[in-house]
Each structure stands twice: as C-alpha cells, then as structure tokens.
Length: 301
Image 1 (cartoon, one colour):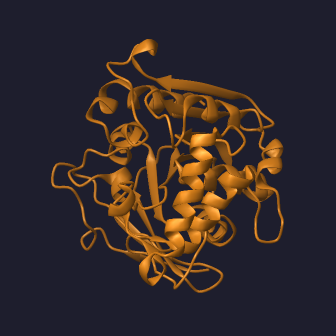
Image 2 (image 1 turned 120 degrees about the horizontal axis):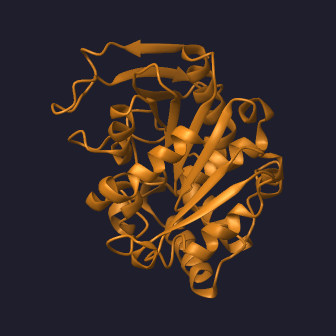
C-alpha cells in the first residue's frame, strides 16, 4: 500500500496558520485511494478520525481554528485521514462502517507508521469515528502495540440504548433504504456536510437496533474491546440526549480491558453551557474550556 505526497505548496492551508497542510494519498488493500492530511511536527503523533456525514473540515475547520490546528500549535504531529466516501478520498459505489474498520484503518496506520516509525500514537475519534478507533484497536493487535492513548468524543455504546433511540435508529435505517442513488444527504439529518452511503447508515443503525457491533464475518467488535489495555477517555456532551447520551458514552468504557476515564461537558461540571453532540469538536467555547483539557490529557496520557 503506497503513499504519495502532495507538496505543502499545493495543499490547502488556512491563511491565519503558518504551518502548511500536507496530503498523502494512501492506497487501501481493495484499491480505494484515501486522502490523509498532515500538519507536520516532530511532537507526538495524533490521528483524528471523523464521523459519518463529515470530512477533514470537522478537525481542520475552514479558517485555521479547528482542533487539529489547536493541537498543532502545541507541537503535536497531527494526522487527519478521510475515510472512503469522504472529502478527497475515493467514493466507491457502496461502503459500510466495517470497510472503514477492516480496510481503511490498516492502510492509514501503515501510512503513519511509514512516516513515524518510532514512538507511539494517540488516536481521537468523534461519534462514528470513535467506533472506528475502538473497534480497530480491539480487532488489530498490531495497532494496539502502537497506540498509547485513545479519546472517544460522543461515541455511544450500542447496549445502553433507550426505546426512543432504538426507534430513531430503525427510522433512520428505513430512510436510508429509499435514499436516492444509495446516498443519504447530510442535509436530511443535519449531521454533516456530506452525503453518506446508504449501506453504511443501514449497517450502523442495524448495530444500534441489535445492540451489537458485529462485522460481516460475525466478528464481535464490542467483545474485542477487552483486548484494549491503553488508557481510553470518553467525553460526552451534557445536552446530547439522542446520539450519544452521557450514560451511553460511559457504558461503552466498561467494555475496555484497560484504564478508562469519563468526562461530561456541561454547566454542572464547570463549563459555560451544556454541550451537544457536535459542540465537542466545533463549538467556539470548546477552544477555551474543553480543548485545553483534551490537549493536556493527550500530552500526559
């Protein structure tokens, strides 16, 4: 799986940030080409994984104010992959969340390892990106050996799901079945800027209805989390009542085999307001009151 680099002069970069963004083109095992963006530094490597309906902009932003830049300013070597179907990566006819875990994740890890063969990495995932991080660590022993810590932002357990969320998941899956051209437009659900694969939506919502994370080969990702021994931080927004409620985020942590920590971001916990699902990664207030805590945790974890 080779990687080709776009020179800094060719890569997009926010005018307010002097460090350029490099783009590496990574070929996955099935031939799909993935875009992996990097804000280069010699500091600790951090890989940021987006969720469904999203792309690199959830981390890089559009004006140099995203979480990726916040980490880069402190010297972290920041990697922002775009999974298949997202952003500048290839768009297959269909793809599922299992493709992200089983095919894309190993290819991305190989690219990072080629550039940063020494040391360990930090992984951060938002929403379904956290599912990719968690399931990938549970699945692949080679990745567990390299990842020092993991942060899951708004990533829920499939087990702790109330009736309202299960009904919402079933409805969402039904909508995906009738979506035009096998795509669910992001504007339909207001979860991100991109259209998502109907197959992925059906797959993920099926997991929620069944209360399991199971691959197409029957592999139990949820049970495999017991293999993960690195420290894992779970962060939930106090106002996130449907997608990743605090109780569900905390419940996911109990499946891991190593030390875990749980944060709730809301007024009752010293924050200026109760955060929603997307607020963890895009809210203006997060830069002042949440991101510094995350950065410190990544630096010391």
